Length: 254
Image 1 (cartoon, rainbow, N blue to C red):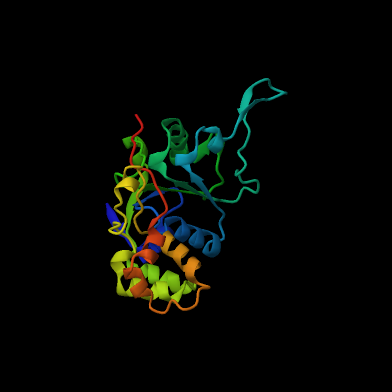
Image 2: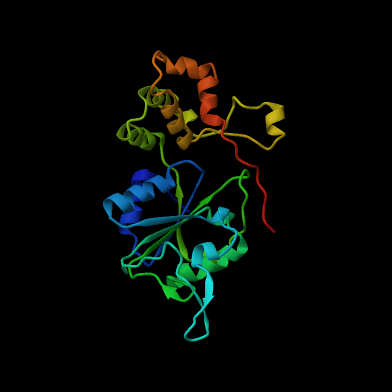
């Protein structure tokens, strides 16, 4: 599997033909969806529709609902809410692909091979990108090798320098940026500050991620007097603010 950082991912997106599907493999909260949205919507002027497949309970959420055609008497699928009406290409981002239920994955198969859903073709030039999270902490579904073979697969591993460039561009709080510059190991990784047995027994454990540091920035941005952010972080409370957003331990669908 090819490993790419943020700059290399942009090159991949720019050079991949639309008929080829892309799969991004990486941890949660590292900026996959944000980079895709910025690249396609702001630079390419293409609408990006995101689907969190792990939250879908019915294929109708993706392909639309079936109805009876009053004229023909045949059943047909109504176009889903997101279906383009202007015949212009779109980008479909299938997030959490390996957390989708098997019946959802069946709908994805035809989409990735033929660019069709329920017999309807996407506009020419439409793009399909998926993302999967890896790690024992996720609820995951085993993916069919036939489905996996339809993607160009990349491990997305952005550097802390990528995040600092983004944080400066988005005007995050300088104390947060300075802290990550001095302690890049805290940008992603394991949570060494939150090992309370009673919390772990509940199946709740939070490790640092890039989304959480953005929340920390928003949390302290209007607070004066936090001059030495690094010292406060070492006192645990500020780092814990970035950690304590729960996620569930792994459960594999069978």
